[in-house]
Length: 163
Image 1 (tube, rainbow, N blue to C red):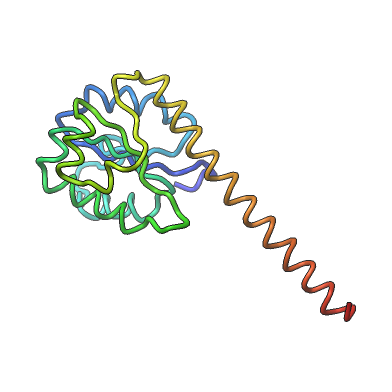
Image 2 (tube, one colour):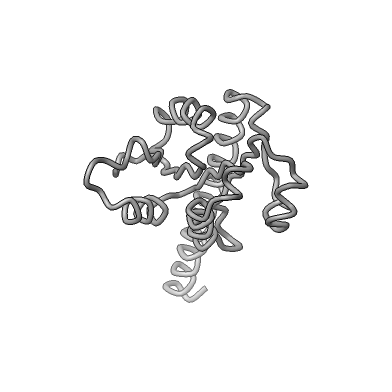
């Protein structure tokens, strides 16, 4: 989907849909949200559709829960999102759902070291945190692009004028 919206992949365990569905409904008007129930249809390859969603996303909201930690499939999604992340590119936006930071730390200590938000904060607070993270990151990228253009513009001007 190329609608100019920021693309978000929503990674979660199927058992957590009672939390994830309202989150998706709240996010979908503002962002291009990849959500399995909305993107996978009869006859689709589940693996291919999920891989496409991860490959094309700007951010991945990961709903860590006891269910998420037990499943191989969700761990594969998480590994795909981690592969996109670099020192300069934040991809994963973690939400803890019915899970403590210590429980996450026992499974993935590195992820537990990242700032996360608890689902107990409520959907409006979570959505605001997502907006803040996404738009702050976007502003940093825009600033970096503008700074590069300015620097290269100054470089070209200096090179052309010999100053």
